Image (cartoon, rainbow, N blue to C red; front, side):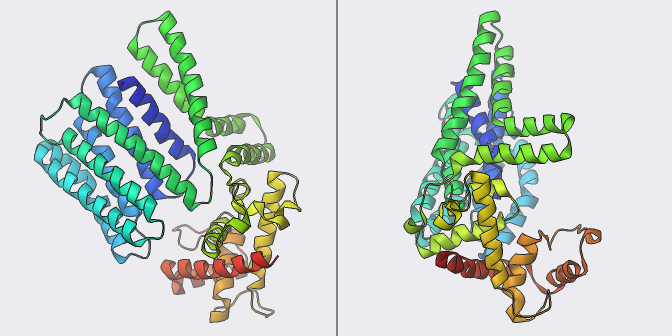
Length: 407
């Protein structure tokens, strides 16, 4: 059971990271699964549990739960900062006195309450309700494991936490796929079967030629990680042997092939106005990434289908349509940039997405920008708060979605 839980949680954590999701909640859930796998590894190899590793999944899930809060929630940023500052000291204090773990369990319960509150007020309440139920079980399992209790054997507590984390990881994967308008089942099953095939083959070889648990463990880990991160490994190998032009072309083709199983089959006629706007907003944020655009349900639009014969052509056609819609937001002026209210929606989409400016990064490469882009970058940094830009982009995405529907 320990080997099975180790293999499955390691694969699921690696899969969540390999998805390349931009959501911090997904990344923290992935690292929580991997931390649990490391705790199991210490038990398998050294026959002992390392308490500090057992604390990591609980602390990371607290951060993931806080990142699930809506960005417009004023308490969100404050709670995240408190979590970032207090997690390591709290883990150290728990090592000094196990009863500090009670504080971690209390915080987990409060996070479960926050998710339950989301389930009561958000539109997709069923998703948050499921997450709240799973979070409650994670809290209970973590309590049995890290509190100084002896109600059930620690091995059973570890198993309970493992199964809860697996369900949590799958629920987070489904939530992430829904948010970005992707399908989950085919890609998830394909990754699992591939990892199972390679890891199982290596495990069979290990069992035939040796009875060493350590060798079996190493080969299982190698098979799971190399298969799950095969695209990243191949990209690294390409940098050793190919020219830059071929590297970029192969990477685009490889990434497109990887995301195609994640593309939703939803048709535009099946989407209501709010869902269509949400998918348009997501596509705009991926305007500079053709493989991710290829996974957007918007490539199923009839006007996109007739412009491309394959996935990359359709992604390029979608990019062209979105760029044209953004250009329509530009005021009727000979100027390339302005700061009045009529320019705000155009500026909010054109410079960050079409030109790829990142206004709030600490290091901006001014040398590669023309005079207009420099002026826009200075304006964003000095006059437009990040939250304001986000609101403008949401409003502008709605206008772009309306324009797409007319085509």
